Image 1 (cartoon, rainbow, N blue to C red):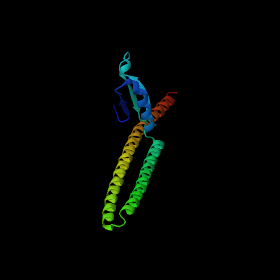
Image 2 (image 1 turned 180 degrees about the horizontal axis):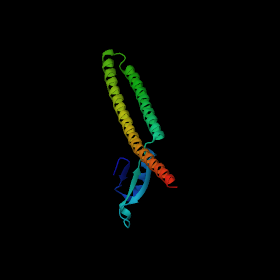
Image 3 (image 1 turned 135 degrees about the vertical axis):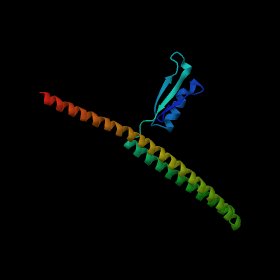
Image 4 (image 1 turned 90 degrees about the vertical axis):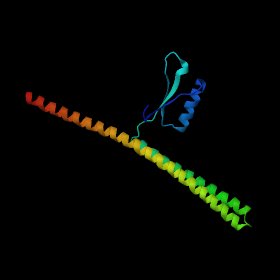
Length: 164
């Protein structure tokens, strides 16, 4: 297919609607339809998902949602980090050397996880930027075509005025 369409073919046709509902929960922005590869074969059905073009309002919404999700994930991970440290402080209060090793390990894992979600955020923001750029390119060409057609129309009207 292309960058804006996804075909989902369930292994079992009896779960087709459940799969469609699951996709909708995760991606409510998709337009979905159930299609058939062969007209007379009910076992050839599939879900066609279409991502609408990323126009300016959708771009703003997706960008903001991605940034908010990152901040929410980071806040939750920071809360887990604090709770883990609190637990280990209680458990290892009498062994400061072991406590420091554990805290260092926890901090390292936390920092790696934060870097992972930052990478995911940046990748998603890049995908959004690319989709918006494609949308603008397509509409820029449409605008050029409309402008050229308008110029042709004006020229034709001018020539018709000369004939009268």
